[in-house]
Length: 366
Ligand SMILES: *Cc1c(COP(=O)(O)O)cnc(C)c1O
Image (cartoon, rainbow, N blue to C red; front, side, top):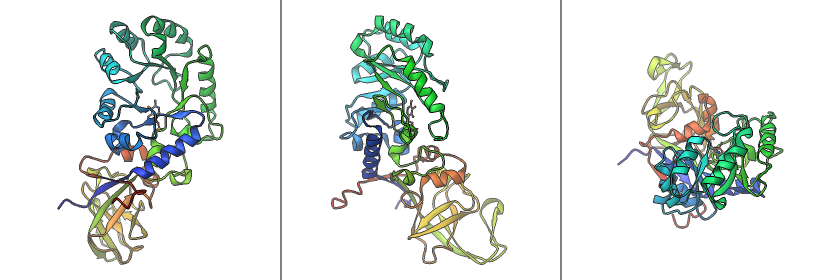
């Protein structure tokens, strides 16, 4: 029997979150960003679960786009970093992948190839990772006009650096720079918003948004959890209690004896650790949940197990399932305790953790 450490993935919650993204994006449409193995949820299953709702997907690289095809989903897929080699061009044409072009060397590859896939041009509006400067766009578009048929040029994308901070005006400024940069091509499509931008009071509105993290129920916005934004957790990470003991005052638990009981403490050991992707930096006080009660971690997270204080859950006993994050404890709370963001935790779950796909809206079939 395998250990009962697993990630439950709720495809109904995934669709709920995608539909919320669509409502917030309207009248723009939302391409579902499912890179990094569907933010750790399984790209094939995520693609299938969203296929009837989402008109378009976006991923970082070609391998991810091919995984969507392997899942039997033939929607358009945008490669957000475009081609990584000249050989990628033919594959993109054949598979109907749309490429984001951010550098002239990618235009060279398109020029050398027989045909071109659908192309988006990346505009650097301030983040300074990828993209052409606004002042270079006229030349880029002129060059593209000699390489690709007009109907193969989809439009422009840019990316926001600070949309997670609602008090920042950097997103307004990037939006202004983008709008002005592309003003000469009114018929082409534009795309700017990541998840966070969907929740801004003055939301930038173009033709396509690109929600990622919000689809999985985690928060893109500083100071808010996913549920506070109307999102539902898609992943519930759970593991069994494998031992329960009572510590006397002065007794410690785990590596480094980093936590010591000051009073009699009933505690449990949970079969999950950083070898599963649970963050080692989640210290004493990080919340978890068992049998209807909130509990907290104590001591240091090990590779295969961690310790919890069962004071809040007097009936908990070995075999009970502990939720590390999910419906009752948001991944955003755990991330905050670990000094990181939900993105890193969700994408960091390791291959040792099996995924169980469920549709909570379809319990009759289960
Ligand atoms: C990852 C990514 C997104 C999605 O970002 P979230 O913050 O997860 O919504 C959108 N656009 C680009 C270019 C990306 O790389």
